[in-house]
Length: 98
Length: 316
Image (cartoon, helix red, strand yellow):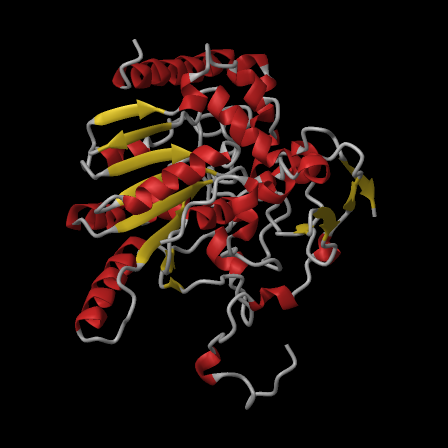
């Protein structure tokens, strides 16, 4: 937040929905999730996705483009809670110290 | 009208209603619950919220994590505000100031604002019959203000206003059966859900949106900070709560027809409560043999409630 007093919207309104994306919570993390694609069901056949469903910080990106699936953590927002690693049915996600 | 997204392929296509960068604690299940709620939405939606963790941590000025219209007024009145929103939308449509044919209104409250403080407002909303879905995310105490005991706190749970020590084993009273109380208002739809059984969650939420008139959803939301549990275990704990009978999954239609949902129905027998207590620091004191009698009381009460529920659902 670096706006001056006369640049802030009237009455302190927040005009842009979902602007919390500008606030990075990755610094909270003590443990970092590491993904191993060998056994991952998403990479193999585009199923499962439990890590994405349960991630409370929307910090997992599952992308499918032209039949090629990729998997990525968004370390800007991941708080390192370890839910993805705990819920993974094939233990493809391990937690490592930062 | 958009379909509810139940498979991962559909879920990935659906717009998320809560963005990243919110400041809920690591491992909190409430953002997951909101995410699952978003998967069930069918069109334009307005969310009204009570004060609580979710309200405070998702909207710290100058940021908001909500991607859909959202309003907060005071601690207790999300249900009343939602009633106002429904009426206001009707008037705006009459005057030609809104083009949306139908707008879904959802009210969200934590357990403190729903079980205790805002209970009157909810009851009023149910009686007036406004077309609203009220969802409570139940984390078992006023976690936001420093883990004070609420009506949803489980017996034996230690909080900062029900300390465990030489004389007391934490909270002694039972948990308020809110879903059953709400069902007694004879409203069209009441359901209990948990984030682990996410397909069940989304289907029930969609049903709640589709019925005419008020609907109520009771979601179980583990809180690693207040429960002294591991952050990664939150979703697993909600599964364990279903398996131990602490949070059985059921639906009530028109206050009369009780249906047990399959995750609960498929249980041959309940898991021992000790398994649930062992996962959380807030029940640590119960290991002391001097609380054995108290523990037996809780076990008896949970199994009694379970039997009663099975009977109501016509399973015996």
